Image 1 (tube, rainbow, N blue to C red):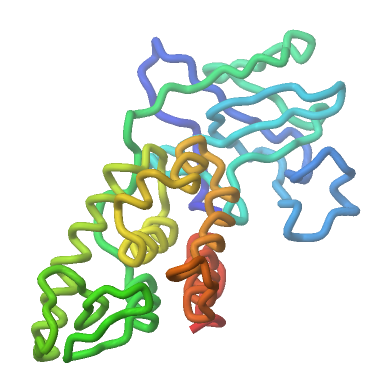
Image 2 (image 1 turned 120 degrees about the horizontal axis):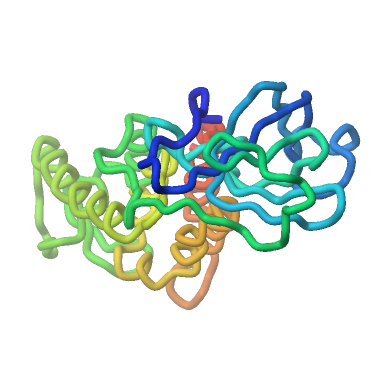
Length: 271
């Protein structure tokens, strides 16, 4: 979960929706009773917690499906890598501008809080992301042909590489910084939803490997921009094949590591 979420700060003329937890309860991945679900499918929340809502919908007499929005610092609220959960309706309140909505008035329509056009984190890959990337790219000071037939050097640099080319370690670092800037900018430009540091860094390592063109046309990006963070994370695992559609063990491990980092899990298990 992100740091203590608070209601979104917006102009008074813009409706702000929040979820008020009236009684200790579970956020759940289904409408099944929370106490019988495994830990990865539920999240305990205590009474008095206020959570910003991007959308909500009543799914039956007892449950509401909510998608959380941005906290007061503009960061997306997540629990266990997910921002969409079910919650038992009698123990919560939907607040509009701080006022409870009459439960009988809740319908299947979902009000949506306006958000900026592009909320992707702007910045640099994290130390964790850089560790993951360097681990899988490796350092080669002489040009070689990679698994998909492209001349490569340094930490996976492909731009301007020619057969017989040799570089120093310092040059490899400079190439890496140049390449990272390109892919950091690509992620920031293409992603239209908020990302935390781990998600941003995992995507940069992924795009560094597959290219921004492939990312732009991917199902992964489409799911992510629909706020399906879990679906986007799972899509990473599909990108593990080389030429001819042959699965590569190294790519499989890399995608598992990137998925783990995206979900703020222990990616080092796959290094």
